[in-house]
Image 1 (cartoon, rainbow, N blue to C red):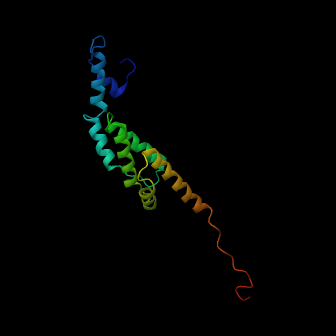
Image 2 (cartoon, one colour):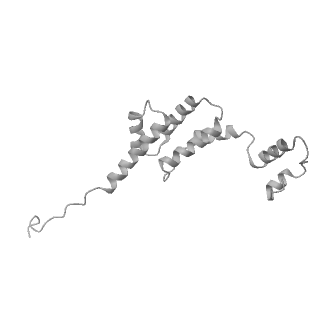
Image 3 (cartoon, rainbow, N blue to C red):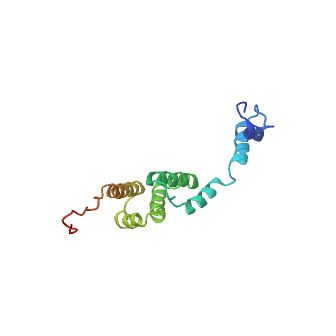
Length: 145
């Protein structure tokens, strides 16, 4: 409590640090001040509404979904959580071509494998964009001069 400043110090003001329940009281006071009453429910709503942002990479989007799911369902079965993550990832990925590719090629994949396939797809797409051949230059003989 001594190291707290500003709003945190204000939130714990009046708690007796020598009390047996001080630790729980401090956490409760900080949660009321900085947290949400029902953190998992808030994370569930955010997770349901989460879509890939325009300039968000596949890796960044994967991490955002993983973090939200960890908060929303902290005690969920690992296999069920993985299944939900995989399905949600495919349904809300921004690129329609990638979405179709994953629906065809990652139906039975787990979340990590689906993300790996998405990264390979995006890498291949980027490689295609950067390696296109330049337009053919017409020679003097072709244009009749």
